[in-house]
Image (spheres, rainbow, N blue to C red):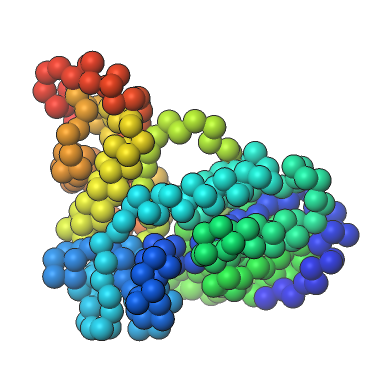
Length: 374
């Protein structure tokens, strides 16, 4: 890891100042905050271990037993029989998320929420004219802790890719800085598995070619990587060089309410994926109902192990009356419009678009629940 002195960040020329904020064990941390009896104990938030539920978040005490997100809850129960298993309380999580995002927007309007507990900020032009991005990140962490009584980890870097990696380096409650003049030193010995989006299948293919680190990748010819690994090869080459031209895209008005997750391991088990869709459907429906809105189009998002990403959608003729309707169609799209069960899936998500107030949505409720054909 690159060690940097905090004061040095202000003297370095930063083309962009990007901060990635990632809350620590967010759902589980909120449960421990709100229930003092759970503090210091292994807490698992997710599905029922007696059924085909999955782990959404595990506290750090639970992680010591090998429990991680997207793991079958039954497996988590075997690893730690004394763990406290809780169903998600999405309204509590959304409330904390709103507080966090409000704190972030005190520093810049360029805030891109990735999920309830994660966001990118571009503080190149800071609202209070603080030039040092490390000081900004430290202030944000302090503000979040004071307001929510939760800890966040932060990564500070010249682009989104590096900031994301940095935020994961010293969890929990970490602050890692990658100045522009230290990027190559930081990446040289970084395992390829640390590149966001690289799963076990891609890692295995790289290791088979003797490619273990970003430093190894950076010495290779981009054309060879493209021939060998397809579009994934060029993506990996750019990341190994620390190149990421993506911009922070603030969401001024939410046009889609969604939930998604990148799994720690690529998944072939269709039934397991369906159990994950159930969690998303419940979260989306309850979240939209609380916000007084509803969507008319369901969007299923899938990213396969080779980085191919697809979306499949279905439009409702009338608003869904419960989460089960969202879940049923999400499962139907997964079964009929994807390669689930035949091609490993790295990321899965569900969203509702075409959002409008419930009163307005009610005016168009005619006909069958679904229009058109799949």
